[in-house]
Image (cartoon, rainbow, N blue to C red; front, side, top):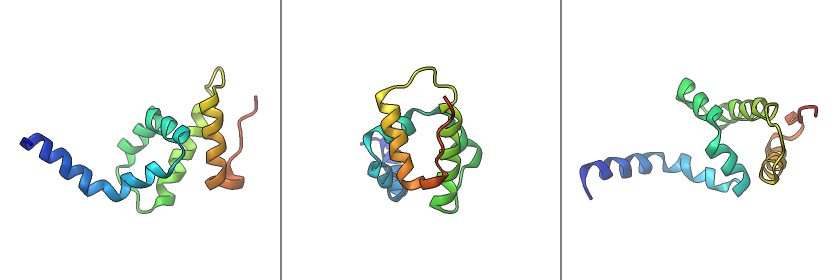
Length: 97
C-alpha cells in the first residue's frame, strides 16, 4: 500500500465511528443522502457538528427543501421519505402537492 492509500485508510479509521451509523439507514435513505448536493453543501459550510441532533436538522431541512423541486416522484424517494418519518416524527411535514 502506497502513502496515498495509507492516508485514505487513516482518514476512514479516524471517521469510522461516524461512517458506520450511516449504514444503519435503509438503502433508500442512504441513496438519497449519498447523492444530495444539498447535504454536501451543508457539510462544507458547517464542517463540524457538536452532536448528532445538530447534524440531523440541516440534513432534514435540505431534504425538505429539495423535495419541493421534485417534478415527479420515484419509488426510492417515497421509501426514503417514509424512513425519515420514523426519526423525525411529527416534525416531518410533506410539502403540499
